[in-house]
Image 1 (cartoon, rainbow, N blue to C red):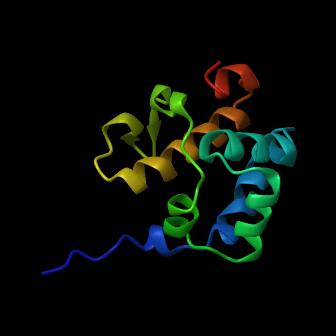
Image 2: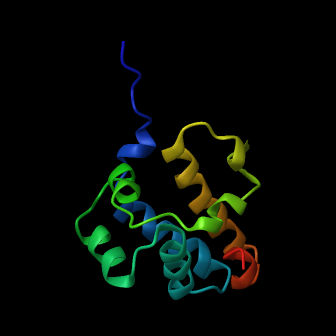
Length: 118
C-alpha cells in the first residue's frame, strides 16, 4: 500500500510565492526580503528562483531542484501550524515548514540577521 503524498507537495510554488510576498508586504516588509530568505534557504539565485516560478514547479520539485539547503537551516526552530518545525519527520514537509517559519519571522518584524541565522 502506498501512502498518498500530502496535497501540499503538489501545490505550485508559483501559487504559494505571492502569498509569502503578500504576508510580508502587509507588515511593511518587501518582496526583495522574501526573495532573499528563499534564496538563502534553498541556494537558488534570483534567476533560478524566477525560473521555478515561471515553470510553475510544484513544491516537491522546487525543493528537489534547489541547489542546496543552507547549512544553518538546522537552526530554524519553532512552531508552524501547531507543529514544531524541528520535530517534523518528513524531510520535504520540514523544508516547506522551515520556509513558512522564516516568512512568519519576517512578518513579525525580526531583523534579517536573525531570520538568516547569522
